[in-house]
Amino acid sequence: MKIILFLSIFSLAFNSSLQEAYDNASSYEIYDKYLILEPNTTYTGGLGIYEGDVYINCQGSTIDLEGGNGIWVYADVVYPSSLVMEYCSVTNGPYYGISFGGMSKGNIRNCNFVNTNFGLKLFDVSEVSVTNCIFSNHSTYGLGLYGEDTSLEITFSLFWDNEESDSMESCPG
Image 1 (cartoon, rainbow, N blue to C red):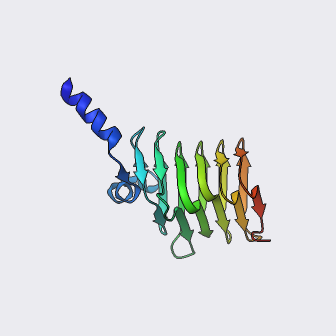
Image 2 (tube, rainbow, N blue to C red):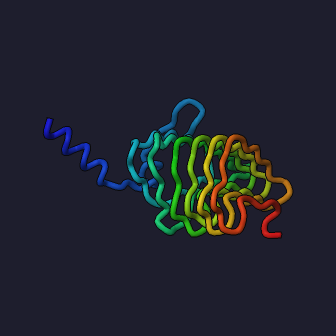
């Protein structure tokens, strides 16, 4: 009983790198990388996805960007990529929480984006669906669309206390 309690306290105090979790993830069903993160754990740092389909279920854990780059997804015709992410809290990024560019695709569900410059940024011809998310306390916008060909479907989401505005289309302009 004492050993289990010690391991539980140790796992709560220990921060893991999001990149390490990604590197150690294996494939499952349609996903090239399938990540199920530990609940009540803080994962640090950002992640770049430039190839393959990725699934991340945070199970209520936090991704603390620690003042660095956020999570970015980029795809083109040769290297398609997508991100499905759910039950995550993403915080402390000076640029963005998640950025989609090129021909990338995404589905973000039940996530919180707090204290970044932009919670979510979409560029180029990216296609993203956002459901039941919170965008709060961003220094610019909760959501920014850069370009006329981005596609965003957003439902049941809340924007709160974002400094410039909650969202902006055709940024900057």
